[in-house]
Image 1 (cartoon, rainbow, N blue to C red):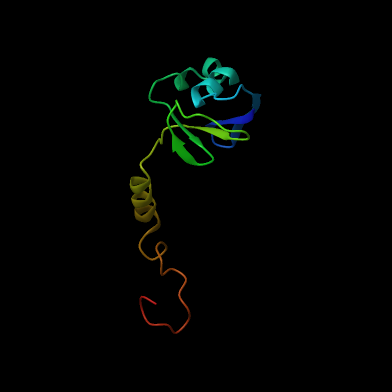
Image 2: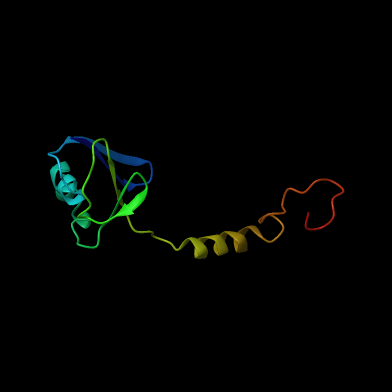
Length: 109
C-alpha cells in the first residue's frame, strides 16, 4: 500500500516522503521506514504525536491505502499567551473584532 509521511521541522520547511508499505502497517512502521527517526532524533520518543489527514492517532494506528501520516512538533508558545502579547503590543484600538467598523456605526457594531 502507498502512504505519505510528512514532517515540518521548521516553518516553511516540509519533508514529504512517499512509501510503499505492506498491508496492516502502523503509523510507527511508516515513521521507521521513512528514515525521519534517524534524521530527526527528537521524534524518536514514545510520546510523539502523529495524525492521519489532520486527525490525531496513536502510533499503533493501522494505516490504509493513500493515508497521509503527519508528524506534529510541539508548540513553542501557548496560543493564548501569544494572542495576549500581540494585543498588548498593538493596543486596544488596533486589535480585536471591531477594528474595521463602518463609518457612522454605533460603538461595538
